[in-house]
Length: 246
Image (cartoon, rainbow, N blue to C red; front, top):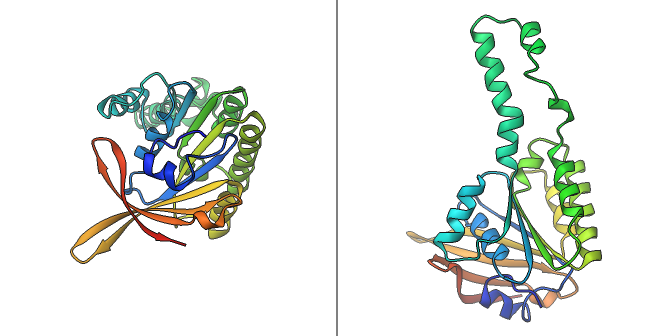
C-alpha cells in the first residue's frame, strides 16, 4: 500500500494507507503539519505528486524539500502567490493611489479591481484536482486559507468532491488544517469525510514539551487508534515510541 512517508506510522497502519484514501492532518501551528505534508508528498517517487500551498512560495517549498533530501520533482502550485498577485497586489495599489488623492471612481476606471469577484480559489483547487486521473497523490496545505475566505459549507462541499474523485480514481489526498479554531461542527464534518484523521499536538510535560501524533480515525479499523511520540529530526517527522493503543 502507499506510504505516508513515515516508516513507523506505516507499520502501525499495516504498511501504509489504501489507494483511494483521503487523510486529514489537524494540529497546532507549531506541531509540524506543513512538514508532515511535505514528507507525505515525497513518499513515493513513482507517483505524480501535486502540492498546493496556501502560505509559501514555490521556491520556499522546494528549498524545504531540498534541505531534507526529499524528492524535488513534485508539482507545486502556490495559491498564496496567486492570491497576492491577483488580489492583494491590486488592493495595495488601490490603497496607494487613494492615498495619493485619486477617487474611488478614478481607481475603478484604472481596472485595479477588475476581475476580483470572478476569482474563486476554492473552485480552482477543485478543478485542478479533478484533472488528475491515476497514480497520484495531492496535498492541500492548508484548508485554513479557504475556511477564512469562503463559507464553511462550500469548503466542506469541495472536500467531499475531492474525496469522491480521489476514491474513484484510486489516488491519495492529504489536507492540513489548524484544529480548535473553527466551529466544532465544521471540524467534525470535515473529519467525517476523511478515511484517516491524524492529529499532531504539542503537550507540556513538566518543564518540557512532548510531540504526539494521534491517529484518531482509520476507516473500518477502530483498533488503529494510536498515539506515537515523535521528534523532528533531519529526516522530518520521526516517531520514537508508541505511547498508547486504544
